[in-house]
Image (cartoon, rainbow, N blue to C red):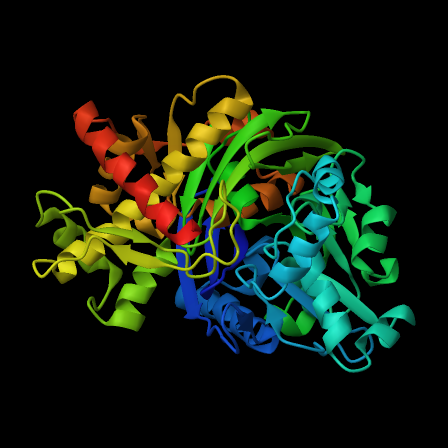
Length: 493
């Protein structure tokens, strides 16, 4: 009987189910767009019940579309938008508030207050992270402080916290399992990545009761078994990782120095750093890459908050494109950018600036500026932001980055990949399977089920579909990047 692995890829703007066979080949996909809510300036929320409903819909849908009986599913892997925070009632399973999304900026003032009190150095030493609203801890505190009765219920042990992976696992198992994995835990601001445990000092700092927290597991192993009413049969959940670490795994970045960059809602560059964390001196993040059989591998990460979301804004906010697929031809229609830059700081700027109050800007506009210029500026911004990260990461690593493995929806655009190669002056490798986030979750699930014998076994399945080399003259590259740096300064001042 042919066996398959079902990947649940719950992202910021959509929920997807992707089916893989046990050789890592993609069989089918089902997707449902997810609504975001913006109650106030800088606030970003989702309805957790919509996330759960959509997850059920796409998982059942991908099986029906491909005529696969649920009994043929050997295992489920879960990957998720990281840091997004849900707090729910342990008895009813109902969230006490909307999910607060990783992009949310409502706790910026609290983070600044902690910085002013000199807490950031200790936080970074323990977690590898910086004090920013991006991470989960200040979101948990906000819910406890602002939802009537929540803090008292939390003290009584009646509430559970989880990132989206954890919330889905709870629902999949009908509340029998409250667990997360080491990568998602490492993004909460309360998990000590060296000691691999929740940190009591940080829990005190953020005023979070320990009894809310899930068990932290390896990325590959038995997390739990789905209730029969989910698919009609019980299926083991055997892999779990935050989306960026899942993409690192799906790109087979298993050795120090290998870099992947994902272009989804945001852009995230991760470089494998081996079995010890590298604590950045350039405002990058140290994070767990994956933990297998109790052994932790680490990565250094640069996080950009707006990548694909900038293109989504061009479509939904401005209405100057009908679909992202139009952007390649529009960018190619111009010989240069005419000095037009977009700084997509819709929810602040991430690494290496970490400016939560920064807001987006279009600069260099003239009467000759067209929709094509604005679209091109949105695409160009991703390469400039990537170069910002690579420069800082190379300084931390002490050695240059040789090549970049890319994935995510934006890299289907050949113009984007070529511009990335030009601005970063590094080869850009696009894999045969660009759905590397879901693939990484499938690999992790398959490792436990022995569908893949080892990391070497997985490495052999990775294939490059196309390699992009730098073609742009160096003076042109320098001029473009200098223009970007000037544009960023305009939103930082």
